[in-house]
Length: 285
Ligand SMILES: [Zn+2]
Image 1 (cartoon, rainbow, N blue to C red):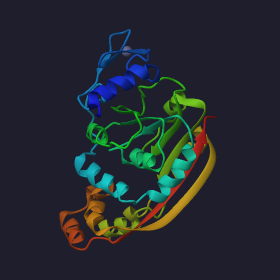
Image 2 (image 1 turned 90 degrees about the horizontal axis):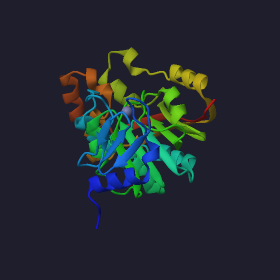
Image 3 (image 1 turned 45 degrees about the horizontal axis):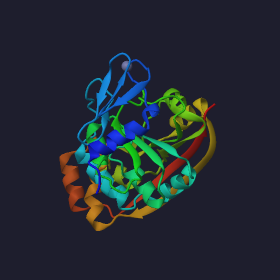
Image 4 (image 1 turned 30 degrees about the horizontal axis):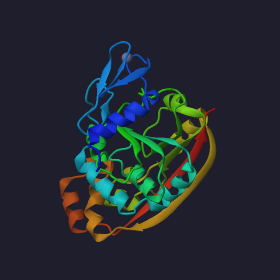
């Protein structure tokens, strides 16, 4: 019999209280029944879905189910499979993995489809994504989802051997704090050609919006951490017919697109899309 989500959450907290710390006063937390609390009486209660909410208030990220669901279907549909294969190799047999900006959790779930990971924690600032993530049922026993802010992580120092940071912002000071001394950050950032057909389709008149540069992101990573390996992957993904409309809804790229243009693209969806990404492994400086 599978446990209810809230019971799974309680068990995880009972077994791993030392992974967490209070995000408000930074002191240790203790697990009691369905909560974590600190000596200053900051208390975090498990939701029915077995998640914890570590923010002072709900954050409007702009990401909602309308974006998370199509994105998840594309990830599970194989759009990032070559990327995930490399990441899974880089994770090796490491025990504790933190996914920063996990969204609806499909990247982590797909990584575990390749090979199970002993313990995973995924968080996102968008509650909608984290709730959806709790629906994945292929994960190893030790996994936990929460809502948190990447600039003030609710995790104890040196807690994770690997941090995943896939298409999401960084806060290197916090990453290095929660990363174990020999741990590694695995970061995935878009390359110049990433989703280029979609950019061109969305903004045919605006050359500036068709281009993306990751130079600043790379410079900042190199300044804050020691890059130990870099790989660029570029390939064309043939989009299965049932997922072609999902591509139009999966990213913030669509936010500025006119309704007329979108209607046109729904009639004439893209059949192929370029995936061009940089994968980086970095250690603490
Ligand atoms: Zn506290």
